[in-house]
Image (cartoon, rainbow, N blue to C red):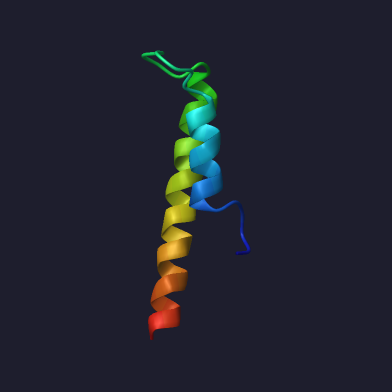
Length: 54
């Protein structure tokens, strides 16, 4: 998929910021940036899926 990392790849990066037992992410700025990237990836993937279904 062009245009950036997949939602699954970004999700893995998000999970890496949350060590086991941690209540908050290690790096909140990085976490926020990854959430924005993840949302964009999900939107891209949904749009691509809709184009394939049409």
